[in-house]
Length: 343
Ligand code: SAM
Ligand code: DTB
Ligand code: SF4
Image 1 (cartoon, rainbow, N blue to C red):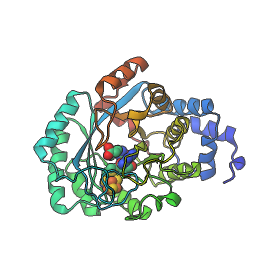
Image 2 (spheres, rainbow, N blue to C red; image 1 turned 90 degrees about the vertical axis):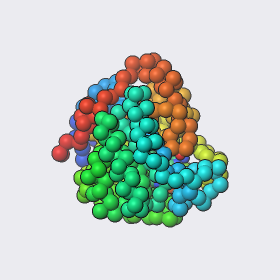
Image 3 (cartoon, helix red, strand yellow; image 1 turned 180 degrees about the horizontal axis):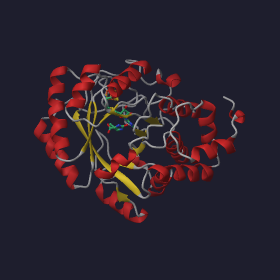
């Protein structure tokens, strides 16, 4: 990839206008990654302020509604039945227990509730129960998101009818590196599910992970795949790998924090109107590293002590962090501010 072919001053001027575009080249994205760090952050913060209020971060709550025993072999995941991680397989949670968690999340300040299930794909019978959860969580006044694995077009439509706002399905990494991380479904399978979700009129939540052992070019490849989709995902979670003992990726060299911030900043610039979510991995991050992620354009995080099966910083630490940084929660009513313009 020849970054020297890119007119970087012209690219910076164009990016600062913050107009969503879908014709990104890999060379352009690589050139953004290669900017001096301060130039990259300055540009990302300029772009951020064209679409979102400054100093506002959405608080989201994650709940594992069906834990463990997953037939897929995603090498990062503690919930795969292929690895001995100590996560026990459980049944699908009852609607009432899910609602109790959603009420508690709302009381703690969350405006978004994400339900995750360790499935390759949902069975239609299970989907009835998940649809009931979605309708009732939505009725509490929370934005809803679900991540249940691969979907058929009909299943995506049913979720939309139940009131689902977003469906999360990550590409995780570049098309080239993907096969080293997951063998039980293909990159194309994931793109197919994303297009069913889009066709059903749902908002798309799609991102990936840093720290899988990928090369810098794989990070470019992931963001290129996302930013050249027919419509940008409205929501882009960027996860730092949480290394779980028993998974094949346990013991990988950890990426540099500055490279993680660069990933957030470039995601913000190439998908200017999307929510960029600082997702897994905050437990291991310093306050300073998280502050740089917000400066780079991240505007959502997960609240609480637990993600799906792993630890998260918890309310006390987050309240102190928000107070130190002068950040306030982004309320539900203003989240629509994030809707990408029609281009
Ligand atoms: N089973 C569904 C699926 O994979 O589509 C939904 C749940 S899955 C846990 C959702 C996402 O969580 C994965 O795509 C991955 O990006 C992220 N994830 C899982 N384990 C992780 C880990 N150890 N560290 C960071 N992110 C992780
Ligand atoms: C996403 O990209 N990150 C969240 C959410 N989507 C579902 C999941 C993070 C899971 C971290 C590992 C665990 O807690 O099991
Ligand atoms: Fe299963 Fe999702 Fe974990 Fe992959 S990431 S093993 S599909 S729960």
